[in-house]
Amino acid sequence: MWDHNHYTNGSWTFWLPDDQSTDTFGRLLLKWCQTCKAVYFAGSGRGVCPNNGNGHTPSARAYRIESNVGGTISGFAKQSGWRRCERCLLLCWGAGWLDSHCPMGGGAHVMACFIHPTLGWVFEDYMPRHT
Image 1 (spheres, rainbow, N blue to C red):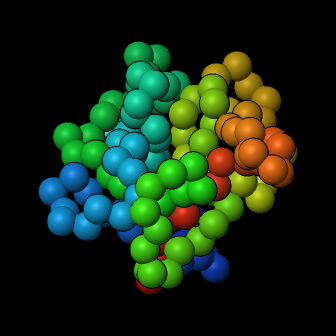
Image 2: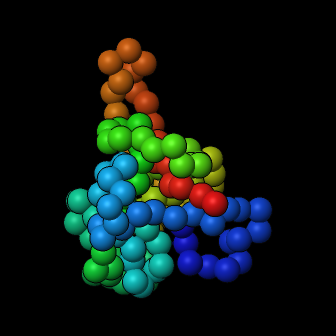
C-alpha cells in the first residue's frame, strides 16, 4: 500500500476502488496521504504522518476496502491480514506488526480489534484487492 518501488519484491499490485467508481463492495474508509504515500483511515481525523507534523495530507478521493468489520464482500482476489493501527490510522500489513514502527510515539503499531459475538476479541481484517 506504499508508493515505494523497493517494496515490490515478492508482492502483488494492490488496488482499491475510489468514490468515483460504481463498485460498491466494501466500505468507503480510506484516503491516500500525499506526503508519506501511505493509505490511512480518514474517519477519525488526519492521524499521524511520519513526514508531516500536522497529520496525513488527504487525497481528494476516498477509497473503499473490504473487511470482516462490515460491508459487502466481492469475488475479486484479495489478500487478508491487513490491519488498522489505532494510533496513527495507517493500513498496515499485520503479519509483521511486532517489528513495525508506529510514527506516533514509537514502538509497534497497535492493531485494532473488535468483539465478535462468539469468538471474543478478533483483529479487524482488511482485504485490499490484488492482481
